[in-house]
Image (tube, rainbow, N blue to C red; front, side, top):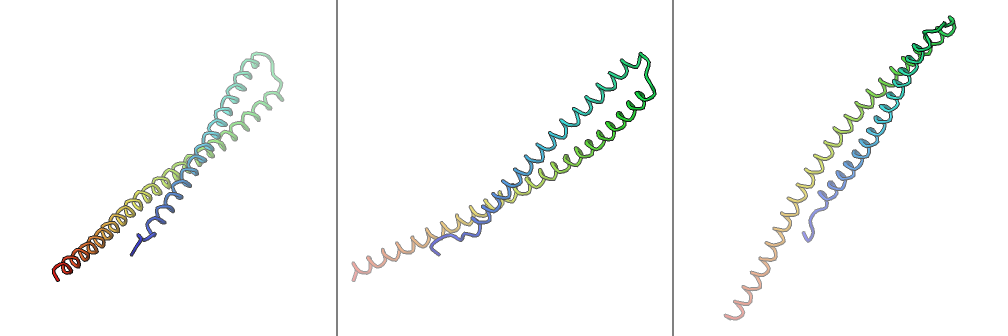
Length: 148
């Protein structure tokens, strides 16, 4: 056994790739969540602005059509807000799942790294023991040669 086994090294590399992929997925999920939150804030601001503008104008006379248009538009904004809020909740859940996957991948990486280090330490001890036996054998041969 001249070299350590590569199994743990390969498992460490695989775990590193998994951690990298999990970090990438988490950052993408968080970016999407931030975009959805920004959209929701813009939508809420638009709703409030339209409501305020309509209340200012409401002091004057409105036709039935204007009132109906306002109600339809506010209803559409409300449905759109509900859809965006649902999408934000789904993205929040996706972010939580991505964080959990990252934690699991990181834990797997730490475990594999530790096992790789243990395996390397064991291999080094075996190598040192082999070298010492070789040196002992050489010393014993010299001693018997000098005695004989």
